[in-house]
Length: 503
Image 1 (cartoon, one colour):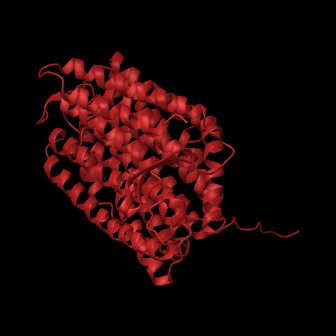
Image 2: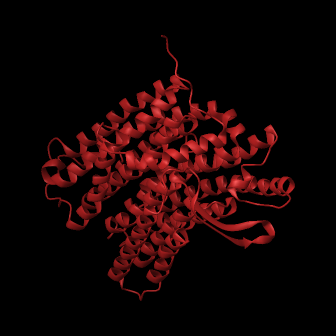
């Protein structure tokens, strides 16, 4: 079998090295090479998709090779429908970010080629973290992602970049240490129960834990994922990181990397520790509802456009976590679809906001106004991205949000009712943002702002097209993820609630 996943991971890594080794001053060539490599990765991922069977929820495209045999560690990769969608999200957004970030690295501490080399390196780690089926390998990729993100924020971001980069790193390292402790415990327990240590996720699902042990191990993984997601109250690093990072970095950070947290809950927390997952579900449902409402309320009060988008994401991640721990097929399918849709809607918002900021040299919302008259194409694309963020019917986020709420209501009606209030708040923060930036009289200083260039139109057009297409026809993604969701629920040992009602 052709090693699709290994090839997909190696291409951007080799491209990163090639970009880094270019002679000094070849900035344009570095950009072109990075874009070409990311497009090649996208082509490979689409070819990989053609060989994926959508009628099974088990792992496919599996590769397994001994790595550190003494400790039972393997280089083992494979994807189910959920992981495949996350890999595709990463490979689709990578060339869009590179094209949209063409001039973002001009004022960084390091060279332009370093910026694009780091983006390609990050793509490799994103593919690796979503496709790893060995828990130790997953942990390696989980931590390795911190390296390029730290330098992308700390070396190319805004005024608060050093503070934001360090805060991001410390939060992530703390979560990673908790996960490492749980990974070591799994090693010891697997050696005791299976006769030989293993980190294979399929084998680990067969382990038996005492109730207290299982709960501690669950928390080791869950807190790391809750920080990465981020879920309230582990969220405080995100607004600082997203506002300090370049828009392209923010797209990958919020649109893809943060999905590692919610993906990890589905891939690791539920199958490995089903008893503990059920035990902590009421608490996690409460945290999710708080995230939905809290993130939306704080978004309404923001004066910085990138911080506003970051707080909306905290609210959206509350919806995703709510769907995962509703323990229903509708909820988990909706959560997975939400991860994909949020990635594209957030990409559109951050990219267009970045172009607005670069033209105005300000990220303060009050400095914009009347852009509909001056830059109509930019205004309309931002408007469409905003409609997706508030889950308007016909936009991609609507279907996923609807599935999450329906799936949650069948088991936790009170949580679904409160979370529905987040939809009203979303309409407020999006429409207020659109009103203040796009409509009304033209604010002084905006009279001569240029509209989107051809390069920017090429970058944003596929994102808007995907948002609209998935709004009307989400079936292709649901067909891929539904069998994997059913398999996950079977492993966890939960079923959808029986229908109720009178005769």
